[in-house]
Amino acid sequence: AQSVTQLGSHVSVSEGALVLLRCNYSSSVPPYLFWYVQYPNQGLQLLLKYTSAATLVKGINGFEAEFKKSETSFHLTKPSAHMSDAAEYFCAVSVLIKAAGNKLTFGGGTRVLVKP
Amino acid sequence: EAGVAQSPRYKIIEKRQSVAFWCNPISGHATLYWYQQILGQGPKLLIQFQNNGVVDDSQLPKDRFSAERLKGVDSTLKIQPAKLEDSAVYLCASSLVDTDTQYFGPGTRLTVL
Image (tube, rainbow over all chains, first blue to last red; front, top):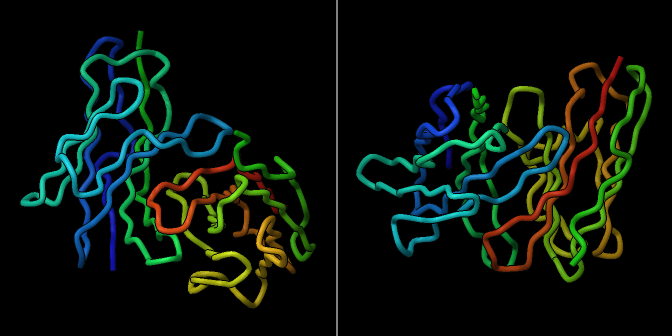
């Protein structure tokens, strides 16, 4: 079984400051890991994903995440926050089911507030 | 390419009424998912289809929820009768077979009074 824990349901950062969102996972098999962003009244948009290639993954909008197996972590960072980064962010773990897609298990989400 | 389409976007009903949501996946995506997202929580998978067959419905409350994907393309999720705790956003997603990326629709926000 897989599970995801996101530390901190709310994060407040100043514009231009570092954004750090924490995610720890549990998986009985080598995981696929994802970060999704959700803007108000919208669906989820994929930011980046780890699928057992490079451990440092770069995504859209300047975000990146590093897979650390020893720490079972997949934290998301962005060097400089922008007002448009205000949204809710979800970390997810999945297992690919052969010929049947994958099953995502999401964390509880972290809402990011960006202060001017 | 067109994204995942869902309708309606918003629905308000009273408890014990029935409601249905519709989803049209991205063309060519054989796998379709329905998620329930309660306010303040992450999405939870309700049911997963592969073409018109069910892959996983272990978290679907089958006494009141049902879903179908008769022709292997669009899908309908129904709740009958609705309870207050069913208030949530219902998200539909789709993916190609044997790929890891799911594409999400905008969701249907259900309010049960």
